[in-house]
Image (cartoon, rainbow, N blue to C red):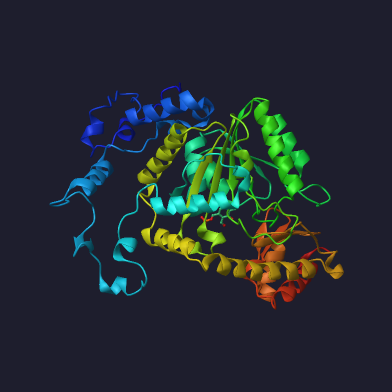
Length: 467
Ligand SMILES: Cc1ncc(COP(=O)(O)O)c(C=O)c1O
């Protein structure tokens, strides 16, 4: 059983919920866990004790307030045939009240699909449709049960919730050195966790550095560790080959067998944007889901990049572990939805409704494939242009085969100096990362722009590097 979390009395109860107030006895120093958190933790202790160990103190404390306002509202929805005075919205003519000046911007959605609150877990029909999509795209799940995806405010909130659930101050997360900078802000700055890195590519820049990854796991043998995997990778645009993907899975299984307790986060933000037949096109979540009792697999994915709806803010968090039971998944879903409830209450209804309708639209997949083909063509042109022999004095090219980006390793000067020169003298924007990495988002360049961007980058490097 988990040790009792220390919480302030104001955190322990929902004061507006008298039924929960009765069951919690706060003291001056500590407060008992809410009984719903106790029940969720007990379910984990019984069926998957490692998952309980992996939870942060906040993760152990969290629960979904299933006996509060939300439950009373749900009960009334079923039984209040005369009048329903439970919901916190205004209604008129049997639909959410709304203004014509707002409504004129929507077509094809009913008022209830726009203005109503969504559940904190997300719309059930959307969660089911997304799970069906995950299963179809991940044959290696092979029927292994997972949680139902919980809807998040896109992948950023999914990652942030992973931190809330599994990272205490001082806890370690392992990532490749090439990573999205928001991991630092969310897990280090916000939560006080530490991110350690291993080199993403091998020395010759031929592919994923499985030696460094395996060694990083071995150095942490027997410990609790959150491992972040992001393929296609931001910023490099690299997805492991099928052989590399197998080696990554095997290294994680070996670490779990050796006693490490792992939360493996598959950040699948750019899933589906694969441009090379050698890429592993399945999320590693599929194989990790049933890998080992010491390994909790967490899939962070969503519509943002995959479906080209960045501003709609619809993402998902899904859990799986070997021998995971419905009670384990319910506990994790409840804790996640409780955190959503406590922070943003629920995710935008119009975004969820639109993504659901799109997923169910027979034309959707073909339309998505068309856009991926546009990106593939840009990636191909980029691959040729950035490797022109006349640029070899200016940079090395990190391998790329997927996603939105590629990365140059600038020679002889700092990437930031090149970025500034590129912007000031050539009007070309790029992102400098670390000392030498310059990230180019070919996803937002036309085919015609690509050659000139690399020509300008080479001119900029030559202009600013010491003679
Ligand atoms: C690797 C990675 N993960 C997650 C995200 C977050 O995406 P979202 O816009 O869905 O929050 C991004 C966005 O740039 C990303 O690059």
